[in-house]
Length: 93
Image 1 (cartoon, rainbow, N blue to C red):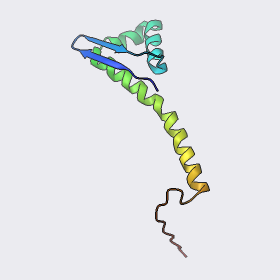
Image 2: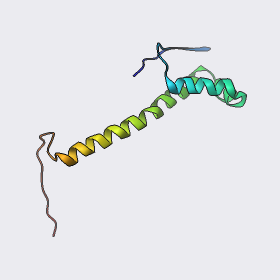
Image 3: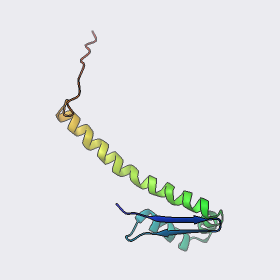
Image 4: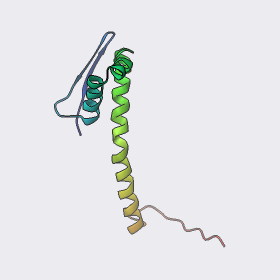
């Protein structure tokens, strides 16, 4: 997990990170390679750029969360009361 420092001002946005943050790198590469997309993102001001960065970072978390949920479900399936919580059984006939 990487950390990103952000400095936002009226006319600027500065991001600082010590390691590669793939969603951030991909966004910057898109802006370098595609003038229309660059204008769409950068032309709306620093707050919108920050919004776009945060949106990409959050989107990047979903696959990790999906994997975590699958692992938890597998644990629950193999050990129904692994967390030691009270259980209730309801038989419907």
